[in-house]
Length: 325
Image (cartoon, rainbow, N blue to C red; front, side, top):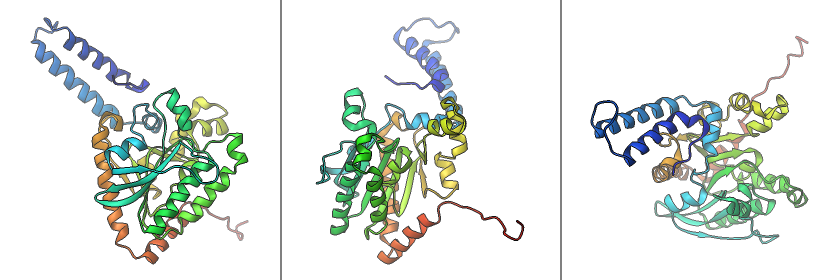
């Protein structure tokens, strides 16, 4: 059964009427045939969807990025990749189930895939820690990426996390250091690296596996230094100002592409990836293959130089004119 978000209530009401009509064939009140009334309702739903999803606010896109039925990393590994073999453990502390990784095939070639993984229900969310990795998760990802670099295999990361786990245990095991080491090491790997934000891209938790030659993002995903709620709590002292914060942060795919922070936006089916995971996975696969081919065509030295320049160019600042002062 489809799960509707709050802003989708107009569509939900039309869908309920359509379901009731299909369940109880009878004489319609409009003086037309039962089949014709169904077609009219379906047409209204399509038009309502077109109008709604063509004019989504940044906050509404954040809600879609967090949709409970949205495809996660393991879903895409099943739908867009072949022969995935998961590897476990960081060889230092434990196996973090919020971070998954292993070898797979993409378009016939071997690749390494790492990604953050959320859960579908309470039990799985506890197992996956709601997609927020501990330091051992980032160290596991780094161990696997080093293996891929050793054997000359491209690295693909799928990002979907609200952020790294901020608990006391994670701090005791140095989560900030683990992320920082990943940033440094990913900048030096000689193999091609692609990253795609498939849902939430929260703060350093996302960037810890996000240093790449090409950074892609799904249409309704977001990538941000802080969650809208966290930003609202700091700037407006009120978490209910999250919609205002989402707009100010410029965290949607379109804004990020315009700012040059992502390289390409991958379209989703109308209404979001959760309505057609197979089609979204096909789009992701095509996008990854396209950009992987382009990056593989570069020389190793050129690829490393471009990767470094790419991230050094992020952010802009101005200095006051000393003479004017």
